[in-house]
Length: 123
Image (cartoon, rainbow, N blue to C red):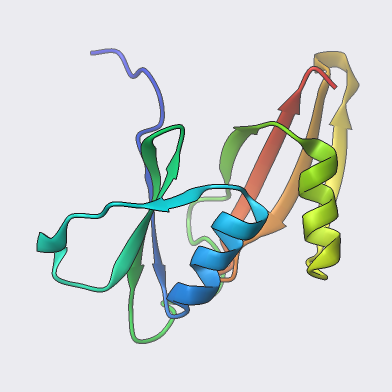
């Protein structure tokens, strides 16, 4: 068996609308088709035609942070646009540079406390 790529991340949220807004409005994903047989409210958020983030609405958040997973990383483009959107929305983020690898990084938490690492290669 060989793993080829990350298929998707599933996030439970007590704030479905706010979480969709964050991933669409800040991160740049698109809301798309979701199976009707799931039986619980939620949303699927797409990147390049693939459902990358699966959201499931729950009554209350299960707890703060990302649990045992430290973060979810995305290969990303548009560093200036992303940091501008984060700043415009008043969202805290940490920017780092790995000059040896020509990568700029942005670390930000979604509305559920999930830490995201956004990697901008070739910086």
